[in-house]
Amino acid sequence: MSGTRSVIVVGGGPVGLTTALMLGRAGTRVTLFEQGDILHQEPRATTIHAATLDQLDELGVYSRIEPLGIICPTMRYWDRATGELIAEFDHAVLAAETSHPWVLQCEQNKLSRVLFEMTAAFPSIEVHNGAKVVACAQTADRVDVRARLSNGTEQAYSAEYLVGADGARSTVREQFGIPFRRSGWAAYCSQAMPPTSITRWEQWA
Image (cartoon, rainbow, N blue to C red; front, side, top):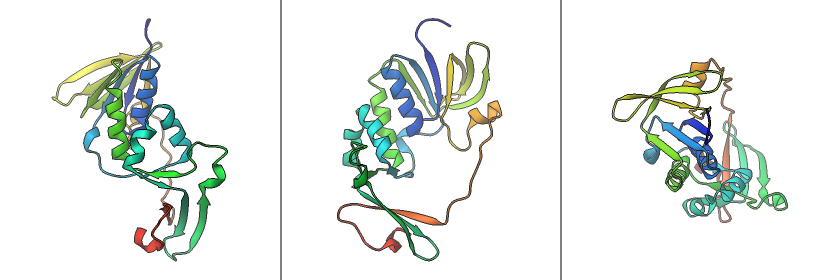
């Protein structure tokens, strides 16, 4: 293949959309498929940590999501069963290492919507919302993907690279036989502490 680099991204959550945005800004041709609805995702994965905030700031994303979230300089971890405080992390100690010495409580659906809106500024990024990738294959110089689009039709796409960002039930991993190592949920919960915070962990249980 020649000319502009091309990448297919499967998954329109924060990871897939951020990847698409970074590649599009660099002039790469990107085709992204999201099986669900980017604009109407369920709230989840609320905590964005300092290193990620720095990266999002470089992309111009942080200024857009800060008003949608809550800045929390401190994180606490509690034992669910006993209510015992396990650890407390004050991000102020990272002030010399990061431009954002805090976590931002901003749900994944809000971040995804902002990223999706920003991809529209780059003609090299093509987003297919409500499109399910049903098959993947690779040759020596390209990756071939077949996707079922939102109108029910199936189409074939090709690119030099394929990024699988489609979560724990990844079609990409399944198609290429890549294992996914699962681990059980730890028996603790986290609490982000804004400057004027609620004080009882039970309100987060």
